[in-house]
Length: 257
Length: 328
Image (cartoon, rainbow over all chains, first blue to last red; front, side):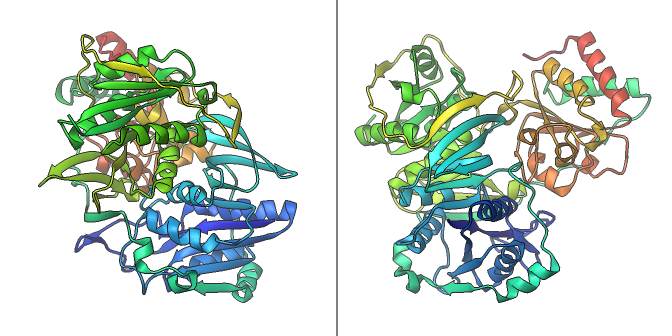
């Protein structure tokens, strides 16, 4: 089985966000594998261990993205591909990303592609479905269970809390939701091994693409922080009194009940 | 009215989701003079939801009913929406940023090589250009986005952020049933298991009662459900509570999990980790109930009560009943 994982690096969820010059300030920030992509890496490894084959992790990024790829390799992925666009692209959007990935997958034998259902930074959730459509492949988003047998895939899909039981045949692209699995931690031997695993670096040229082919359809014109919240009001007195006051405030002052 | 904007009336278990009405208001914000054309898809009689879309401001409705639309699939919905787009050539299209909207819009955008702005919370116009505001980093920041060329204004909107117009039951409009042969589905929905309790959808709820580790057990959540019922709200949870198995992951609010923006957010036994705050900080009014007066959540709260939640919640419920201060 040829299993591919789409991976994005994101800010650590612990990071506070600051903006300078209309951009998110990345200086000194810790980057991690997008948490939803971690489920994808874990699932890919588990499926490979069951059904055989290889797991290839693909990311679009800059040279620093190697770190997250090495982490995925240390978890157990077999090889990794870094499509480095830092010299070619100043800006891109989900159209750009899907277009680059489409070119990457052209001519490849693919059985299963896994991705996170959303990246916690831009959070559009578009790239997986966009890519599947370009590859003329069915896709299922927000999966919480995946079973494969003889080319048939049985999937549990989370639909805002309800579950859909879905059947589809390979090849298919799925995006992963929390609850699918528990991503493993990397072990020291895993990390050592990962250093020797193949990591291919590509640029747009290698994919026969130029800047114009992948030109973004949308543009960000500004980035800003939400207004700071005013300090709130701590209620005082007997608990019963506080509750009475709260109910009063919610209905008369805040007018929300 | 030459220009038209297509909006999708999304049915959930046979009933229109509230965000469907909000798409009509959003469409008016794109172009107040455009014809608002609503598409309602499903399996069965769609007359009533079609009429509701008109009451909420749609000028015209197309309904498509087909056995293959009884459950949502991206392929089924995608075929129908794209066929209607081809026939009608709208200048804009708005759908709710729901499980269905998130799933089908990128498929359409990809097929038609369009830009798509997902999860918009506000729409404004400046010198004729439409600007969409959307949260990034789970609401830790926001960005303003525009379409780069004159292509379709294509966006999904987050529920609860763009107010629906006042419904007017005397409004009338043309409702046409369209035949579309929905076929060649590669994905089959075998079964839908409804795990959600009846009641208000978390992402669309005006009031959210969320519990954390402090709630201590699954049974502890019963008081939250009672309060939610009383207020017409929905129950949510912190990651801690979900990890501890007090409730299902589908209730999780935070940087992983759902981002909610209700009018009233009541955080019960939640300490307020930065990841959780990202999921609820843009709520209009925040109440925190926690026994630890140093808890981070109080920094974000409009009103705070330091106390034992198992003492506070029953009193809260009792007081609400007493005052009859109930919202439907």
